[in-house]
Length: 278
Image 1 (cartoon, rainbow, N blue to C red):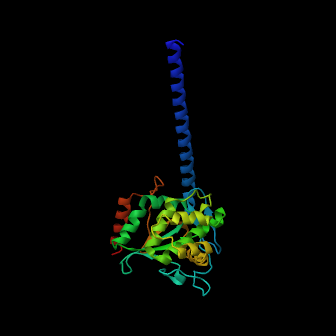
Image 2: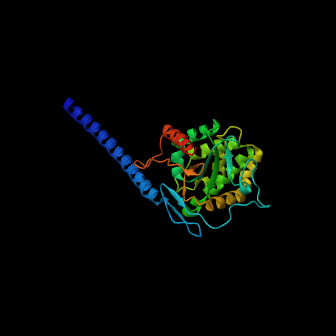
Image 3: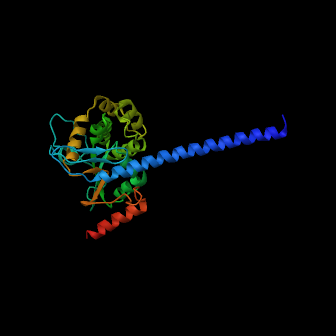
């Protein structure tokens, strides 16, 4: 074969590889653009009217729910309530110094993809400010994405979180981080799989003991998870994630980009909110 023929073939192969790479890059860019458009569109649905029943509006991005007129999650003799919980019926999980001067209320659903975005951007900073005494965190968890999307992943993940907080609030916070770090697509009910949840729980050092594993497999804290969900539905909060510092809702997403604010911006927002209340 002549040198010209070889060069022509090599050039053709090179051009083909570059063309394939460009096509692949365009496909990735297009997929990401479509996802961002879905998120932006669904974020507009954050404000919805509150009705007498649970109303859920959710999709590939923002999870939104209206409060219902049901129980606020009171305790029941037949419900196993995890140790280390607070609030009526043990429906609140409090992390940080009990005597902290400020309180951050965090409303989330383990299947909520926007909660995951916030966790990845600011999660470590949110907990660090509890660690240094700036505020204590009160977690209010929801499961309404199960109703909207079908499945039981939110409830099962919350029930396992109950088994974790039964060990300690620190274990709950570690598991909270792991669950969001491994959150499936919201249309994938992977958290419904008990074995998968236990595999994730093993990422928290020392969490999976025989008692913990039995509680997860037996669904010991599922009735409690249902009480927690009822308390969320009665809270008046209409979307997840919602963060309230001393009762004031924090704007933790940039309105121009739809993305979570930076860790530095979050810290500044917290300090400004505390100072403004004095």
